[in-house]
Image (tube, rainbow, N blue to C red):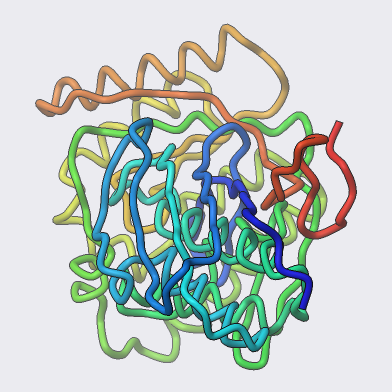
Length: 329
């Protein structure tokens, strides 16, 4: 094992669900993410700290922190039993629905792999980052960690064994992401879900998901927008967590968005717009923020494209894409 002195990695934010894609669909978002640096410790204990530049600070107990759990899972799979010193720079706040925990655990896992000078098979890396995600959410789902790791748009069926497809996001697709100043915890949102659903509703949901995937595959933004707004199972069960949702969606659509949906368990709301029409993007953003304000919520807004690269290993010569192991210009 060719152990390095230190290694760092960055992983992007992610959106998930997009309507009927609950626990099955995710996409990496350009421009936002977390950085994690890892060193070998002089002891056998793992340590966790947050840099002064972090937007948010989570638990520093290595057994409870998503990044340290993922890093340790990678180390174990590579046969390293020494300690790890982990520093996290959070570029994402928690409880947003934008894959904050996924970005940290993916960056930590990729940095640990680089530190130890080895490479795991993708399936083993995926298992490690799912362990990290479960430390925060209590559920080992991959709809955020897999896009953060591999970039692009991901549709997945299972994680053990891993069974997914990945495809590139298209350049003319933009997401206006509005983040109200409220927190919705993944654990709380999951307790609101029904334990069973009628067969007819399950069949209908599967059809909606197929139409969503078809819209993504054919880069059909109007159809994508239509099916982003199509979920008769998860959103109705969680509606009480987002009392502002109907007004925000209505504002986005009236301003020219092609579709609007909650990302993950929220509270982030995203609207899709095709074409680089700056005026329309500003109009959609303003309308969604105004709807939040009218519901007594301050909100920030930003425009993002799909990040087709995913996690990056940060080297002195510049970032290297985890998936391709190619330098990023």
